Length: 363
Ligand SMILES: *Cc1c(COP(=O)(O)O)cnc(C)c1O
Ligand code: SF4
Image (cartoon, rainbow, N blue to C red):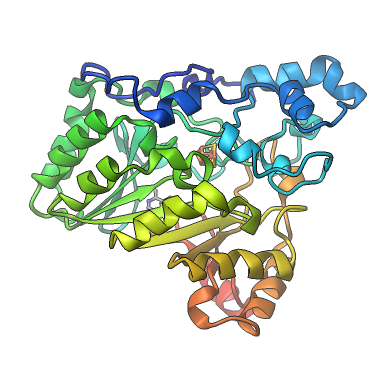
């Protein structure tokens, strides 16, 4: 945790694409975000938990100055009070284990920087380019694979996007743009509309995919205005959300997912396999069930990327394969996510779901 990602410094207003008018502050999601919890001690106090001695000492403040705690109220409402092992709490509470150095865990584990084709553009796979549309997120997941990404160097002002847009315009082999980050829905509607409209004018772009955790963690972001923006595009929109546990998908989150799905926007989920959080057949089965019951297709279950400070979340691939096998025996095929890992240099995510496939695909 040597570098400090600019995007993760706590500021209450969404950033990205400066130079366009900010939406009036009446958007309730922006107010919800400005009221989010920003420290472990506050988080523990709200859940009626007592900090252990480490938390009171310097360790946590040191960790949190590198990668602050950030938890919106809506998400907090879904965490059980009095339970230090709550699977939602464990995703967001800073831990002294983040300081443990484990060999094999490094800053840019998935080699994002080697795939950077222009400011704000990563391309690893054929036909698909990923844009770092915003540097900030609405929640800070302690296991984040981009927790050390240098967002400060990515486009912020309208003019900064010119090289990225030129590249996409000139490369007709790209048919899909993925808005990622950070969280692309941290852009307000005006800024998001501007970026989408620029992309919509590039004729060979057929699909616009949004990778966002905001429908799960800050559901007030999913507004009728956002839906009409996406539905108004020439490109086919798709939404990939990120939930790891069935307890995340209740109340306002459930309503946001239903709004997306019933609006006709294909919606899928990606989860990360996380120790102590969703590493049981029962947890993964409940997650898949609540997703498909609401029309969301479980897309990927990711093996943890080995980023520094996240080793305590790792589950072995052997366990992962067993869990997926057991899921396959309980659920319809469409409810079983593809269990994958990202291997730098591979032409796509590498399937881990059976031993033979694994041996065939790992170089
Ligand atoms: C994961 C990823 C994608 C998307 O891969 P799909 O298999 O199409 O979902 C695209 N670009 C980058 C850089 C990625 O890491
Ligand atoms: S929302 Fe995604 S990018 Fe943001 S902290 Fe969580 S895992 Fe990382």
